[in-house]
Image (cartoon, rainbow, N blue to C red; front, side, top):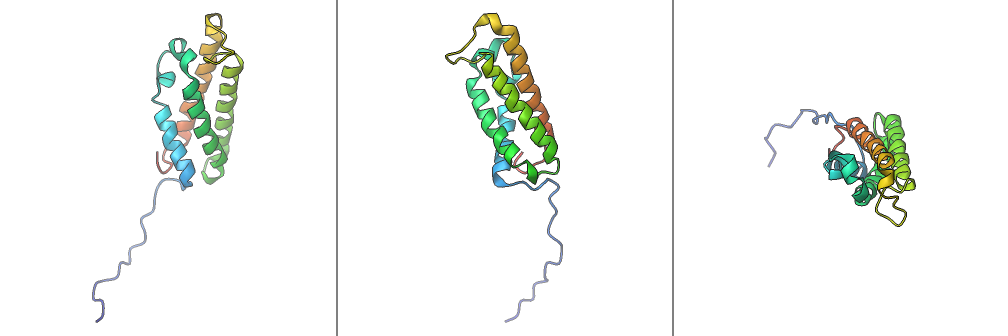
Length: 136
């Protein structure tokens, strides 16, 4: 018996989003979730001492995006922004802004607030740069 159904001659639907690997797409989704964390949206002077988990999650996702940035149309910009975020997170730690054993205390609040602001600005930029990546 022959198939009498018409053949589908339409070309496959083009996806308007950049093609990214599964890990990068998942990391971009994670960045979008992290952007809703209190350490990203609450007053930085109130939250900086409790942002260790936020920074750990952020570092993980940013590293994945940075490592897969060659898959993105604007990969060079994504890589630059990612490096800036990671450097800002390192500065935050170096200045004793987290809750770890080297926490600096309230006397360093202005520095820590500024450090967290740099991390937050970088994340906002990276989210804009990866908008439309499959999974986001």
